[in-house]
Image (tube, rainbow, N blue to C red; front, side):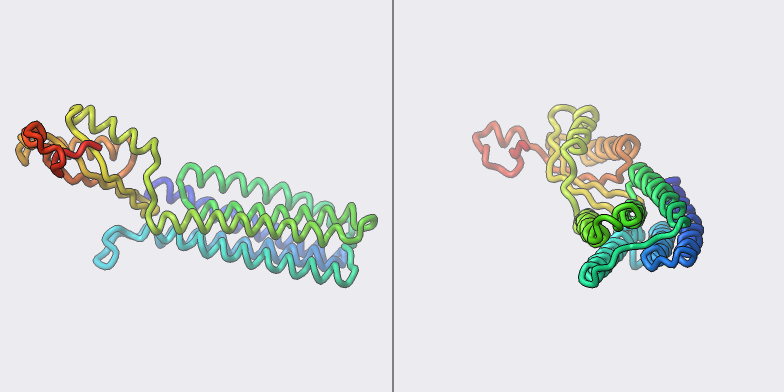
Length: 304
């Protein structure tokens, strides 16, 4: 299965599929017994979560494939692709919520639920929010965007069940409450989808390394290469299951190629050990003599 992070993400997908199927059966039965169209629709929404969780599993399977000739950096970005697909599914769910809400409002319809609806809806809210928290926790540990997206889909189902529950209590008194809450939930889903897509696209296009990461790298360079070394030109490339980090370092030009290579290797080893990134360093000469000869505009006198 690959590293422990991939196993955690895969585990989240499997748990989600199993619990979503069980919830679907319970909510569908409650909808039939209560003659509730809204609860049956909510059950199908829960079943759609199983699809997104399956996509998480497939995405992790694909992302952990070994590098090959066509993909020398591996397949880790399948995580971001899966996250984008899940976010688009969130948008589709939100659109359906808005359409249903407008239709109910236009027809002056309000929800009517039986006793089974109380049990199924309250249990669904608790389980789905629990799954969302579980997915968010795994996403924080692994940094997996598709698992985070799956967590938002769990939360969307919990929110849709909140709408149903609100309809149970308030519809007899405020007939349009179900429609209004449906639109509010849709807007929340759109916002969540936007955040997921933005994060995934940024990782695919390439991100600016954080100030904290750059600070840690500069500290390692100073400790291994000395205060006369000047790192700059930082780039980070996220491939899901691993991160490539490249930068340049100016060191005194008197160093031999072998000495410079040895210093760069020590820095790369520490970055891998302490920051879990595969570093590639481009060494440049810093020619003090040229600078002291009033040639301060020389490329080799650049001090970041």
